[in-house]
Structure formats: C-alpha cells, structure tokens
Length: 182
Image 1 (cartoon, rainbow, N blue to C red):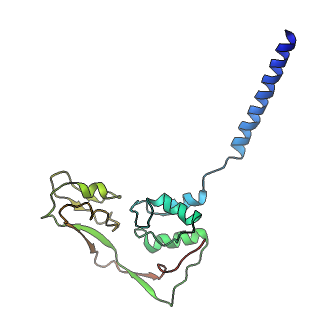
Image 2 (tube, one colour; image 1 turned 90 degrees about the vertical axis):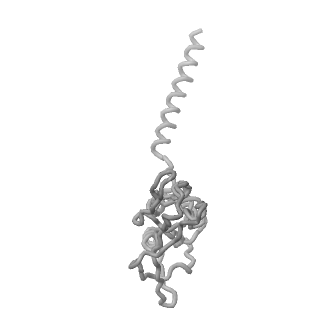
Image 3 (cartoon, one colour; image 1 turned 120 degrees about the vertical axis):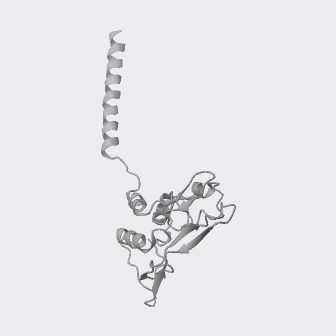
C-alpha cells in the first residue's frame, strides 16, 4: 500500500511542477494579438461607415496588413488618416504628376418639410449624427456627420441629400489613385 501511495505522490508532484512550468511559459511567452492592426484600427475614425468596402474599421485594418489593401480608402478619415497610417507603416506617399487633390467635406441634410420622423436614418447613421424622435422632425449635427451617406437609402421620403459644407476645400496629395503595397 505504501508503494502505491508513494507513486501517487510522485505523479502528483510531477504534474504540479509541469503545471507551474506551463503556466509560467504561458505568461512569459504570451502571444499578443496583431499590435500593428490595433494601431491602425486606433488611427481609423471608428465610424463603421463601410465606404472602404469592409464591414467596419477593424476589418479594414486587418485587410491593410493581411491582404495588402490600399491605405487610402477611409473616406471619413481622409488624407489625415492616410498620412498617419503611412507614417506608422513607414510607407512613402508620392504625388502623381504633382497634381493636387481637392476634397470637399460633405454632410447629410434633411429636408424638414418632408421628414416624417420614421427614425430609419437614425438607425443607419454609424456616428449618431442624426437626432430626433419618432414622429418628429430629424436634423443632422454637421460636426459629427462623416458624409458616409448611409442614411440616404433607408429614408422612405427621400428627404436626405448630401451637401458640401462651404469653406471646407482642402488641398492635399493625390493619393487616391496610387496602390500602396505593404
């Protein structure tokens, strides 16, 4: 009986030592999620507008790293986000034939005379730039609107249009036509 008890204690001790070694190894050699994807995701505006062709900012960040997607597809972020991503990835952006890209900021505008207060546009807005309640007139907070135009399609009365904000012309590098490989 004592031989069986000694064998059990030895096996338990060996298991305990292996458990501590595995636990320490797990903590010491922890594999973190893609840090570069996290950094790109933090740079993106988190509007989840899908204008880049992906279902949100995180999938777009993953595509930039894993699928060599172009870094200039974020419409709400514009040139500022593209330049930050290029700096992070150490990618040089060059102008094409020294042309300048003129971009104008657009925002949604609701024709309040035709708005029926259905709240479909509010549900579609990824950045909560539309305010209003059911059966009342809605309006757009222009400072929050990214110009993604996702609110236009669900509107049953077609009272939402995109308008250019006066005085928002920005001149920058022509980076929209340049494929960027990482």
